[in-house]
Image (cartoon, rainbow, N blue to C red; front, side):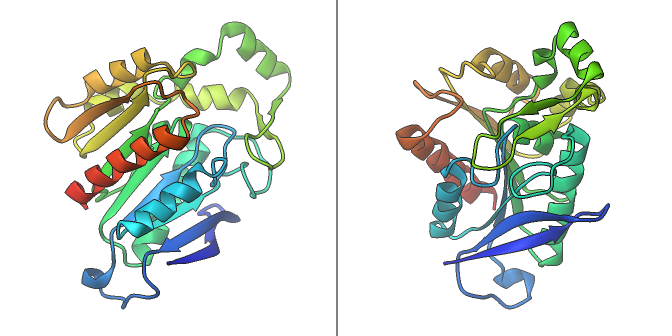
Amino acid sequence: MIEKKILISRSIGGNLHAVHFLSKEEFSSTDENKPPFVIICHGFTGDKYEIGRFLRTARALNDAGFDALIFDFSGSGENEREMLTLSKQVRDLEDVYAWAKNQEYSWIAVIGLSFGGLTALVANLPGIRTLIFWAPAFYMRKFFTPSTEENLKKKPFTIQSSGDYDPISIDITFVESLASYDVNSYLQRLETPALIILGKKDGTIGPKDIRKGFKLLPQDEHHELIEIENATHDFEDEHLTLFIEASIKWLKKYL
């Protein structure tokens, strides 16, 4: 296995810090010799490593024969600080997806954690083979009360990152961007095979909202919900193992 730190160009200028995990040393440029590829999207206030969880995930994907990529969204992780918005993250993911296509990957999937899951849902990813949502924050808009919005109009909020990086910043444009997407419509129209995994003790997003989102998906064999006993929103250790194992089983079915 090879792990390469790289920079991926943003379509509006600048770069995104990323790590490319290759399951084998090198492949020829022909599509049929390229392994399947998985893009992993971090959550709100998170970064490409997600306190080690994504490093473990990417390496497990390599062991299973998949190439993988972890990256920092705009304003997060190693990237320069700027105001976070869903729209910016959507554009970032679309840029990363275009990069993967330029690397001649043709079988591509996305794993999105929490806010990264919402980002993956609404991004335009033509030809994506499957989506996996880990504890997805489909209804993140509900967490911003009228009083919080009024405060954001007056001044930005600075929020500590979950890793070892500088704090992230949001202002009222964060809420406005969330409100601009009709999440239920995206869920109802999601024909792409999709797996949702949630922790039954997720006190941050809440199983109820995640189940609500799942019920809007096409109810067929290509859309599945898995619930992990005793897992919280910050699942790790044996719960992380269960998230990874379920995801790899799903990926082997569709990639």
